[in-house]
Length: 388
Ligand SMILES: Nc1nc2c(ncn2[C@@H]2O[C@H](COP(=O)(O)OP(=O)(O)OP(=O)(O)O)[C@@H](O)[C@H]2O)c(=O)[nH]1
Ligand SMILES: [Mg+2]
Image (cartoon, rainbow, N blue to C red; front, side, top):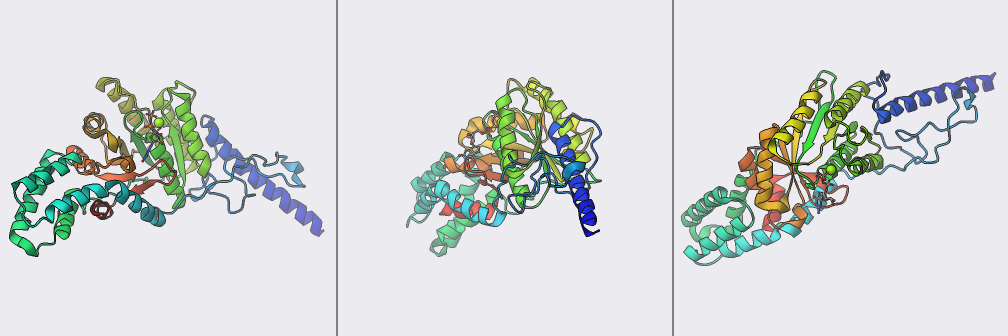
């Protein structure tokens, strides 16, 4: 009697697991019609296992001795999912790294500002340091003007470090809304479209961003709309696998817009919180780019509104990067900037320049090639890092 009840229970459990596997299988395939929508609260798609033996997304359910009703292979290849770093400790680590790469700028400025006599040569020196850090001509002129006034008015009472800190913070924009729009409305997922030139760090950013969301227990699906290079799709798939986030992809050379469409369709059906779409960075000419990205966005919006368009910009490319950024912002409505490779550049001033140029806030910064080297941009932390 008890063993019959036990057997029925085991068959029921195996059945449920098999259904879960089938749903995940549909996401992986990404093209099969009519998947059974999972409830919105479902974590099938991304939830890391609590124990190494728990079924991972995409893996077949574990076979049980009484699994005749639903035979399934053993989970030999179950990847052990990584648990991404949480935001708090990430910020502490990244702050240190930022200080390491940007401290020189602040130290240089402070040394000049702390001189007993601030003569014309010194102010010129300050201007040179700011321009050299890619802050841009207009913001530099403004900043130097304000510093001159304050140092004159406040005289020797002024604490150069405090004055500089306040003015730099004002320049970066402490009150700007930098929240990422990753949630959708009306039962639809938030859609994040990631654009930028070749090698800027788009795919890496998509992978890192997915990790941040996983760490915050959000469900994510990735769309590999950078279809012209198989390696690019594989690169994204690897990022996804490490944290158990599924990737919708098309065949090599597929129309990027169709992959993006499919990703958002699947994400809506499965009920994930956010779909992040990676794109290719070819900047052949403005018309071609406009054609491709415009179409991707238009097609996605047949399913759900794009909630965030992130432009990824390599901080080490200076003025050249700014020109490219302008072209992209003319093609799509950029809503946020991701500044990558700030770890490799002492030119943090690009934060100020690009915000001014595009009228769009820097929302995230990349500070290394490591999987958790991406953080929300904090003006105060940035200025603290500048001042060393
Ligand atoms: N140091 C450092 N390297 C980074 C950062 N972000 C990305 N990278 C590196 O930059 C290189 C290019 O990154 P991808 O993410 O492949 O760039 P992409 O924009 O997707 O390039 P395409 O797909 O070719 O357009 C890789 O070697 C990354 O590891 C960062 O914040 N710091
Ligand atoms: Mg890429």
